[in-house]
Image 1 (cartoon, helix red, strand yellow):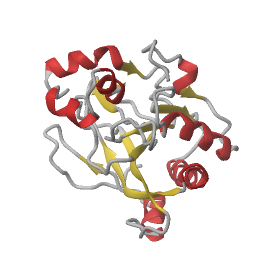
Image 2 (tube, rainbow, N blue to C red; image 1 turned 120 degrees about the horizontal axis):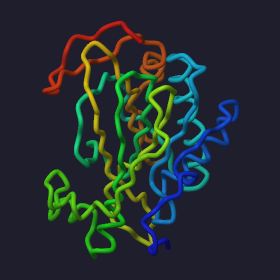
Image 3 (tube, rainbow, N blue to C red; image 1 turned 180 degrees about the vertical axis):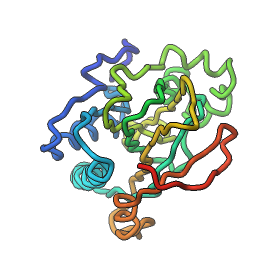
Length: 254
């Protein structure tokens, strides 16, 4: 198990894939994101370039989830289900956090080109907890990273995503799990994520196509329907939030 280095090389966490080969890209994303130990980062960025449109981009996200589902069924004997799909103009900075979800889940976030600059950081709180002799949940309870003292403990385990480019379409996968490490029963090891929006601007958009995907037993009932997946791909609506995180009216801009 990787325990001697907290640094990840750019090649380990940033991909510039051939978008015509979604099977290979899905394999790379799955390996890096859906880790059950600390030999992989638990997150990954794929830069898909600028020669796309929003609908094609979102369709690729759905197709990648399908490819990753096939991998998960082969390797884990479980399947992947969507828990949520949405499009947001997110211009509110955050502190290190998990999105609310089940014990084993990950986020697939699709960032569209934007004039609003931001910085993304991932904190390996599961590894930090493991090396402190705590479960991930115990770490969050005792050392809440929303407060400075908890954040300081995570600082050596935090990676700023290199090569994040507002000019391109990008997918960021983030392991969002909260399960203790186990050799006997391998389970996903989660991370926390942080976004810093440099200069929010209500006249511009920072569109994130946000999906949460969970590991569930084979045969489990789907939460999200095929028609909802189709709506996610085809909609032009973007949910907007003001700087106090209050819901604003949807608009039709892409």
